[in-house]
Image 1: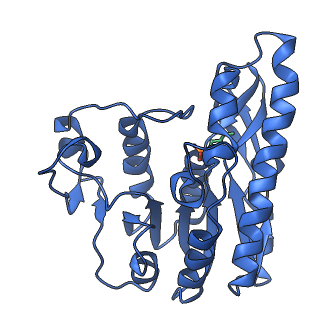
Image 2: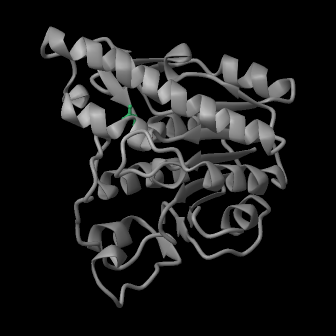
Length: 258
Ligand code: IP8
């Protein structure tokens, strides 16, 4: 099985509220179609989630009743994005069905408390492709919290031990310094724990309620324990995702537990 996350920065314009990048998503769907194994998919929320979630501090949990209208509208917005992603996937020939995170998962303190793999298993067993996504979810200690698509990637990786895990991002992989802040950054073909420790921490420019790049890489290192290969590829460059899901050599960073 191959587990893929379509990052919010690839399928949406993260700087413009609720802006879907349909052509990019349709191309990625076609690239996924050639996968050499069954797929499970996760997508980020991009500008359908992060901008409003940050504005109303939804990542901090229930602090005032006035947030609840925003919980409802952000949840609606990420469903709207999910429907658009499903459309693109189905048009590309993938038999995608949606499983919202809270249908299979309970949360406490913005972490997964319980995860039930059975819905993903059933859907996959009959030849469909499960698709889950970053969402606003009920939380046992915080009222509600944000479930990043990365949290779902971690649970799916633990439960199903995929052969390959692919994070489809808007960069070629991990660089020795931030490539968006000047020239001369070198792509790291492999990143392990020691490599991560030596990277300088930088903060993302755009609104992101699910943590820093460093935190995301920590999570990827944990995911890498549950699969043969965990990699980051650039979803904005045509053909990279296709090569990754076909098991071919591709420009990427392979995240390795070391
Ligand atoms: O884009 C975030 O999911 P992510 C979910 O996978 C929301 O980090 C609602 C902001």
